[in-house]
Every structure is written in C-alpha cells, then in structure tokens.
Length: 171
Image 1 (cartoon, rainbow, N blue to C red):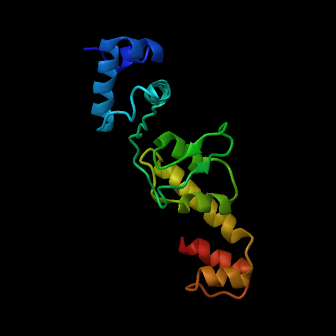
Image 2 (cartoon, one colour; image 1 turned 180 degrees about the horizontal axis):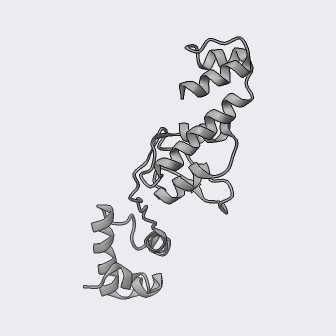
C-alpha cells in the first residue's frame, strides 16, 4: 500500500485519474480524519491540496527538558540582547539562565526572578547569590528611610546611613 508521503508527491489530477491512488487517498484520509472527504469527486482538487499542505506544514512542538517553572506557563518574554529569542515554559535551561543573569538594574533582576516558581538547575548558587545581592544592594541603595523601614520593619534606625549599617550587620 502507498504511504501518505508518497501520495502527496502526486498532483491532485494524477491521484483523481488513477484508481489505485484515489482509493489509497480515501483510505488514508478516512484513517486520519475518521470520515471520508465530502463529495470526493466534486471538490477533490481543493480537498487533496489542503490535505497535502497540512501534512507538509504540520509542526510538532518539541518540549525542552528543562528544570525551571514559570509562574505563568503561557507567558512569553523577549530575552534582551539575544537576537529575538523568546523565553517560554518550553525553553531550555540555558536560555533561562541567560535571561536571569544578564546585566540590568536591581528592579529588572528582581522582576525577572519573580517570573519563576523554580529557578533552573544550571544556575549556580554563586550566580543566584550574586543576583540576590545585586538586587538587595541596588534596591536598598537608592531608597528613602521610610521605604527602608517599610522593607525591613525589624530594623530600627534614625538615618539611612545607620539603617544600612544595621542591615549589613544583620546579613
């Protein structure tokens, strides 16, 4: 019996005129779609062309073997400075690590990290710690005393300088 790959190499008219090819088409179509094509003789050329194009353009989604989890699995994020690469739930760990470790201010790094439920395994603990430190450093560096008190209610101080000293001692 002829396969679908062999059958779609023929033109619609060749398949329609050859009894064996036509019967093979009807059989394969019925196996795939669960029914015979509507009016196989009247609209055969358009139905066959559409069916052949579906077979040639069918894309399969290959899931990457990743170790991270995004909070919103449907979210797509453009990775900066990566020539249009997009981070999704199906992306590789390497791309997620690239996204998490790229240069940026503390707000950006914190926002990027907040997109993940679990971070990728390849992300070294040192790099993760570096991200945390840069986030804390930048985040705490430009804040007013009121904002620092809001972030760290357990620390009591009367000036930003003293507050930062106590924060450093705590860490």
